[in-house]
Structures are given as structure tokens and as C-alpha cells.
Image (cartoon, rainbow, N blue to C red; front, side, top):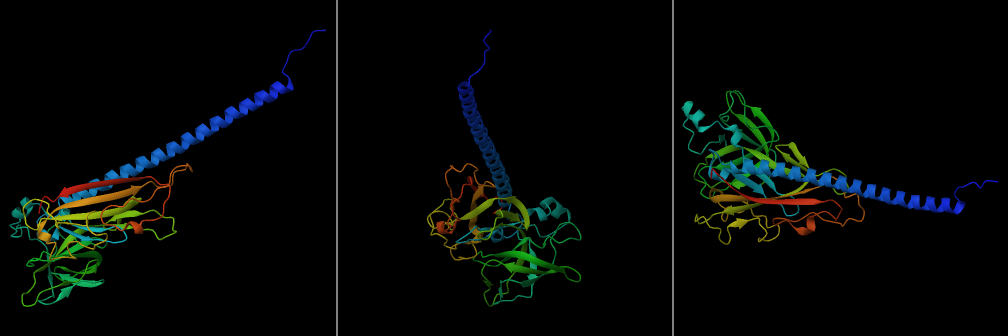
Length: 340
């Protein structure tokens, strides 16, 4: 009788075991590769957001101060336990010098601004829900006003020898009869007290405002960088601003001329409007910008190391959120103001 060939039970069991081991290895490799692919995609997105945000802020800062008083170019709010807020004069709303000359406009001396009426010598301006009356609209497209809800505003006294500024966000605009408008502002900086005896020359400057919406603890929503109330990018965790104020006008960074940088006290609250005697806005020369972005989600690899939001500028390290498995990128640059 002819013998039949085949596999024994032991051989089948060994083969099944080897196949199972190979399949497990393949699944693990596939899973690991997929997690890596997901994380690389998130990091790439974060880097693209960082590049977009940095280019936009740098561009606005670089051209700020165009045709406005020097101390109206930049206004900042230095925060101890969170992101800073940046106000930048809006050069886009202005006509060019050539256009102004074609209109025979006398206002091309670098002191443009919407004149503010109703506030005299010894008065003050500031606080939330403040109404200011601007007697003229900005020189731009006919029939429109460049002060809009959600946008920023910088107010200065053109005759102020201390170079002070205050800034805030516009919450309402009501056109007045004839020309001008009443603008309601939530000022984010301390009140500007005006000297007595000399009538002030107050003007309002349209501005871009950059701020970060920080989610409440335990709420699963992303950080949001907004410009004039409009979302620019998610997962921008921090922005810190440093100011080089060339007090002696020698073009050299001397001791005591840089505010809000790593070398100053943590959360010292120093910026142009907080310390007018030390930081004259007319002498502002450069702005240092530090930005921190993160990936949208944690690294899916549970063995990945934990990380924490990076600290830049003079922010209090104790104020950053707890550790997680997100990946972060930090960008820092120094921008020279062309028009100041």
C-alpha cells in the first residue's frame, strides 16, 4: 500500500506559532510606522503655522509707525502668567505719500491720527468701556472708517515729551453726524493721565491687535492666535514681546534699554505704557518676538517622553500648563522698525 505524505500536528502547530509571531511583528511595525507618520504630519503642520504666524507679525511690526507719531508705532501688554498682547499701528489703512500729495493733504509729516475731542488739560483717558470722539475719519477709501469692531487702537498725545501710549480693543463704532465717530474701547493698559495747563493733542491710531485665547483648565479646546478678532492659527501657545528702546539714541544696546527679555525680572510688567520715564516710545528701535506653537494632539506613542510648554521672554515658568506628549517648536526674531 502506498504511503500518503503530509504534515504532522506538531509541524502545523509550529508553523502556526511562527506565522503568529511574524504577524504580530508586522502589526507592531505597521502601528509604529502609522504613529510616526501621524506625528510627523502634526509637527509639519505646527511648523507651517509657526512660519505663517511669524511672517505675518514680522511684516506688521516692520512697517508699523508709517506716517504716525513715533510713540504710536507699537503698544504692548506684558503679562506675568500668560501670553503678551501686541498692538501694531496699521499701515495698510493709510494712503501712500504720493496719494496724499495728490490730494494736497498737509498731513504727511508723520503725525497722522484721528484727533480726539472732549478731553482737556489735566484729564485722563483709559479703562474699559471708554467712549472717545474722533473728529475726523482716517484718509482711506471714501465713505469708510478704519476703526472697526474687534480691531486695535493706539492713543497718544502728540505733544507728550515722555513718549507714552495706551492701547485697547474697539467694541463699538458709531458714526457721528457730519464726520467722525464715537468709538468705544476696552483699554488694556493703565490710564493715561494728562498734564495740567497744556491742552493735549490726543490722536487715535488704527492698529492690529495680536492676542492668544487661552483655554480654561480642563477644557479640551486649542490655543488660538487671533488678529483683530479673527483666528489666524490654532495651537499657538505663547507670544512674548521684548522692546529695545534706545534711550541715549546711540544705536547701541546698553544696560537698561531692553524690556521684557530673558534678562529682566520674571513678569516685571515693563512695556512702553507701563514705564514712560524709562521706556520712551519715541526711542523704540527694535522689537523681539518669541512664539511657541504645539502639535494639535499628543504623540500617540505612549512611550514618547513627556514635554512642557517652553518658556520665553519674561514669563513666569510656574504659569505654563502641565506636561503632556505634544511636540513644540519655538521661534524668535528681532525686527527693526523701518518708520521709527
